[in-house]
Image 1 (cartoon, helix red, strand yellow):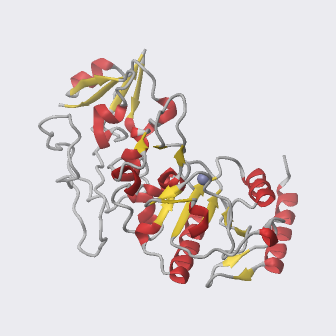
Image 2: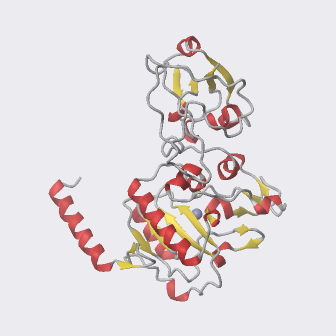
Image 3: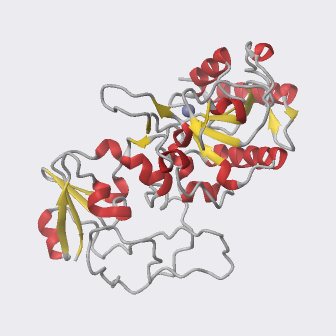
Length: 350
Ligand SMILES: [Zn+2]
């Protein structure tokens, strides 16, 4: 562990170094050169640029930077602290998409810019990092005239060859960059549209092999919605009552909750509705009995093929959806893929 004095000295050294190597490119975003790829000179100049592809490295910064630099795997790499490193020159080909297809065209590397973001496909990123990604994407969009809906994530374009589990070419090979398809995160990045459908599964060139991913890319699953809400929460209301929906399944189409008022000043082309439940008084329920006493009913049990999303729809991570297993009661806002287990019962308000 470092003493704070040492840490401060290192921080200053890093700042001084950053100032030395920083250049302003593209646009006004400072880009660092400390990890330029040795592969750079051998890469061809790209014929066209039609997509910006966002990735998550699924590893910490240092190892991520070393790897993408050694192999020339992206054009830019953005760290958690918001530093942007140039890896491969932006007009050359970087090998970031692997087996990939978009709108019938294979090998997306040939017509895209790739940005690796240090972090994980389903985890929140620090604000400094999101700001840097936002600024970089904004510059690249302007430079290559790319509209919002052609800023995609790796999982939009990656596909898998037939294998023992999937007899067909399939979408769903990777969940890389998945969070960047979520409307709330896109809004945070200044992106207000996303691809409305998968052109390759629609044309039956590919089949969808990851239903959860499909729901994130094109459906209403947005696990970051509570972090980046579309609208401000209304002033605290006297406890209760949120009108109950008539049924729980199937998930209702997007509809603004009646308790959420949209301030007229907020204008977004595609507002993503966010359900923010007013926590009921008396703290979170701690047992099945307390859930029942507060009017919750079990609406399903997670099992093979029956996911939390299938049971609770877009409210699967809502704070007023609860999961019970053994003696535990877990609110939906503390649930993610890794905490879901078979046998969990899902509770929602009657
Ligand atoms: Zn990727």
